[in-house]
Amino acid sequence: MKKDWLEPINSYVKVEIRGEGIAELINACLAQNISIWNIKRTNENAVSACLYTKNIKGFRPLLKQTGCKIRFLEKNGLPFWAARMWRRNGLILGLAGFLVILFLLSNMVWNIKVTGANPKTEYQLLNAAKELGIKKGKFIFLLPNVRQLQQQLTNAMDNVTWIGVSLNGTTYNFQVVEKEIPERKKALSPRHLVAKKDAVIYDMFVEKGQPVVAPHQFVYKGSLLVSGYIGKEGKTKLVPAKGVVWGETWYTTNVTIPLETKFQTYTGSSIIQHKLNLFGLRIPIWGWKDGEYKSKEVSENETPLKFWKWTLPMSYIKKEIRETDGVKRVYTKAEAMDAGKAMARKEVRKLLAHDAKIREEKILHQSVSNGKVNLSMHYQVIENIASEQPILIQQGD
Image (cartoon, rainbow, N blue to C red; front, side):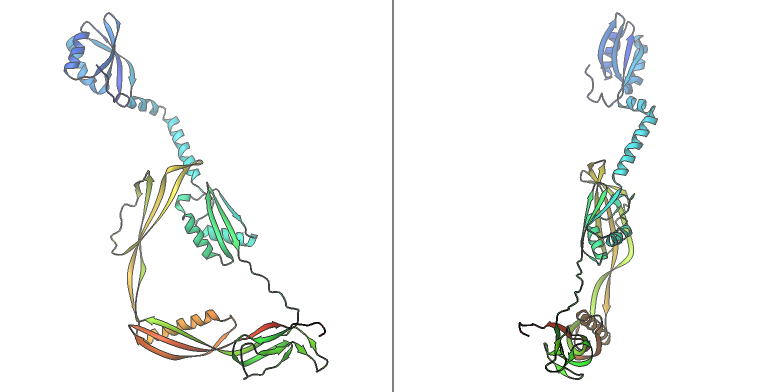
């Protein structure tokens, strides 16, 4: 009788059958569909054969009927192999524990390198990265991906132009391009101070040079404010004019504020799902509910898993589902006017130096159309209008 193709998986035994009714026993097995194979005669009254352990129960009555006896020689198959291995569970558990520890260590942060930054910037960058969870001993698959880290770190650092983030094995590499803030060179060559825009002189303080304008005087852009020539006629000399000339300047800003605005806010309710992506099959690990939210925002972060230096065909997925709530903000006309004024002032502030002051503001024009309030705002600003103009010296002067 041929053996079953499931022989390597199913458990089977090799037995020795003794007795005079061996042929009758084999025929009885065939009649009752009991698989028996590898039948070999060992002597005149004995043969060896293989049987599935699941058929032993039905095989024993046939032994009594034929007067045969059996002796077990071998036990084979996956269940017996597993039982033998389980008897050595210390070795198996030790090996499994070693593989698990090696897997976890392969997915931990072990080193952080920063290039292109001075010590102060490097210290600030490492602190910013630590706030995002980037530190030694953290699991890589629980951290934000490289693109998110790059964006968040660049936004958090004001003194850098760009931060490149890469992950090489268990090492995070940060490449920094710092902002180059050139030092303002002291102008030692002779120069005038001229107006950089139209203005009415409000006040002035001259350290060096000869003032040529006075308060309440109107000046155009490019007008001379402080001359670099000092001294009496015929005995003049050139100096680098230095001082501050405060002028009253004017700005106009147009803003539009809708009376009704719809925007999304987070309610604070969220669900986090953890999954394992194995050959494209997503296997849930924790968090099976999707959340019965009417409005929601879904974000996913997928991190490949590694074993030693190899990337495994599996990845860890962290899926976050956040409930959102549509909010409708309604302004009255007066509230919209106040909001528009605040917005206009903020826009003007972007155009001014930190030491400039807004002296007066007034509404030039206002209207309501298509559910929006339109404002045109006028500002009187006191700011430094002086700019340097080198004095060209010709030969013979």
